[in-house]
Length: 624
Image (cartoon, rainbow, N blue to C red; front, top):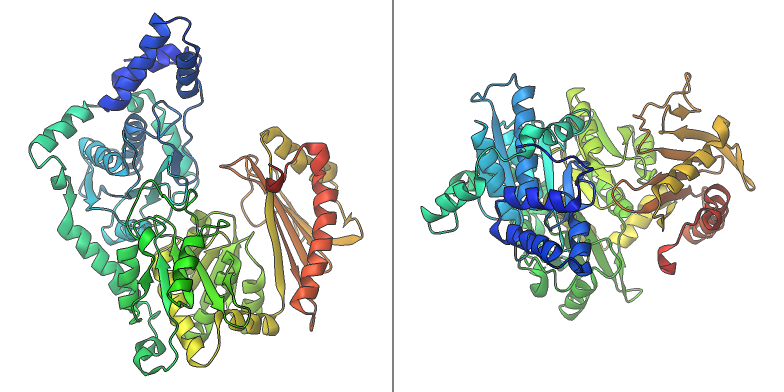
C-alpha cells in the first residue's frame, strides 16, 4: 500500500483515507462525500467540504504533540491520524532504545472527556494502547478521566519511556489534542520532537499495521462493550494515591495549613472545573493540604464536552469566570479557584470588600504570590540551594525577588517544555526548584512534576490565602505589599491579528534594522537587545551570542530600555497572532497608577515605532 503524495488530488486522498480509516462513522461520512462528488458532478457544496478536509497540509506534530479540530482527513484529529501518530511514536521509542522490545519499554496513556458524535479522547487513548502493544511496548491505560498532571506524574512513577495525554486542554470544544511526554516526565523538546514527527510520516507508519478497528470491536464483544479491560483501575488508583503522597512529602503542606481549625477568619473558597475533569482531583488536593472544603460551581462541575457555559474554557479569557463569579457572589465566597478542563492551569480571583468588586489575578500576579510565598515558607529554611524559573515573557519581578533574597532564578524560552527542562537541569545541579511558571497561568510548585500543575498549585495558593486572612490580609493587599518591597512591575501584554505569516517575519526583519538594531525608539533609549532568531544576537554577552536557544522559525526579539522597560515580540506558533509583552519597572516610591500611566504612554510609542501596525496590516482584536 503506497502513501499518496501531497500533490495527489483531494478526491484520491479521500478515497485512500476512507479505506484506511477504522472508524465506521467518519469513513462512511467521507465515502458519502466522495459519492456526491463523483455522481453529482455539479455538487459544489460536497466539493467544498471534501476540499476543506483533504486539500490541506497534514496536521503538524509540533509543541508537545498534536492539537486540532476533531474531523476526518489528515489535517484533523481523528482515529486514523491518532493511529498513524502512535505508530510513528512507538517506532521512535523502539529505535531510541536500540530497536527490539524489552521490559524497559513501557508507555502510559491518559485521556480526558472530549468527544463529538464520531470520535472521543477515550477512543484515541484505546487505539494508542493497541498500537503500543502491537509494537511490543507494555502500555498502561489509565482508568477513566484523569487530569494531565496525573499522567505526567505517572510517566516517572512507572519508569515509562513515553507518556501520552489525550486532551486539548483549554481549546474550544471542537478541538482535541495528543500531548507527548518523554521519560523524564517533561514535555518532549528538540531534537526528540522533530525525530518523532519524521517517524510519523514514514510510509510504514502511515499505513495501519493491523486492522485496529476490528481488534477494538473484538475486545468490546468480549467485555461489556466499554473495553474496561484495556485500562487498569487498581494501578490508576495507586498512581493517583502516589501523586498526592508526593505532594504531601514535598514540604508544600505547612504547619500553618494544619492549624486551620484554630484560625478565626478562614476565607470561603469556590472552585470551578470549567466543565472539565478537575473537580475530584481538586477536592483531593484540598484534603492533602488539610484545607476546609470548597464550594463547587455546580453548573460547571461535571465533565461536559460541549462546555455549555464557556465556549472558550480558559480561566484567563475575558468573561470565562462570569459563571463562577455569579455563583461565588450568591454564596458569599471570598476566593475563586479555577482549573482549565484538563486541570494543568490555575486561575484565581478574590472579592475585595473595600472596592465591592472581584479582582481576577493575571498569571504573572499568581506567579508572584506563589514565588514569594514558597520562598518565605520553604526556601529560606531549605538545606539545599533554592531556584525558581519562568518563561522570558513572564514578569521580571521574580528575578528581582531572587536577586534581593539570594536564590537562583533562570529565564527560559516560552512553553512549559522549556520551563520543565530547566527545572530538571537545576535539580541535577543540586538545587531545590520551588517554582516554575509562565504568564499563561501555568505553575509547577515543589518539583513534583516538571510540567504545569493546576491541582498542586490550587492547594498552595489556598494555603497562602488562609495564612493571609488569619492575620487580616487579603491576597490583593499582600500582592501590593510585595510590590512595595521589590518594586512595581506593570505589564501590557497583548497581540495583533496577523493572518499572513510572512508579515510577521517581515516585522521581525524590520526590527533587526539590517543587523544594526535600534539604539533608540522615539524618545526612549535602548539599553540592550536580544534576538533569538537566526543566527541570534545578544548585546550583553561577550561574544554577542544569546544564552537561550535560537530558532529561525520561531524568532523572538527583546528590547531592554534604560528606564527599566522590557518589550518582547514574537509570532504565535499555533495562532494567527503577533504577540507583544511590555513591562515597566517603577522607580523607588512611584505609585502603581503612575507606572501604569508611563507604561501606556511608552507602549504606544514602542508598538507604533517598531511594528508599524497600519503599514503592516496588523489588526487589534477589538477591531475584528
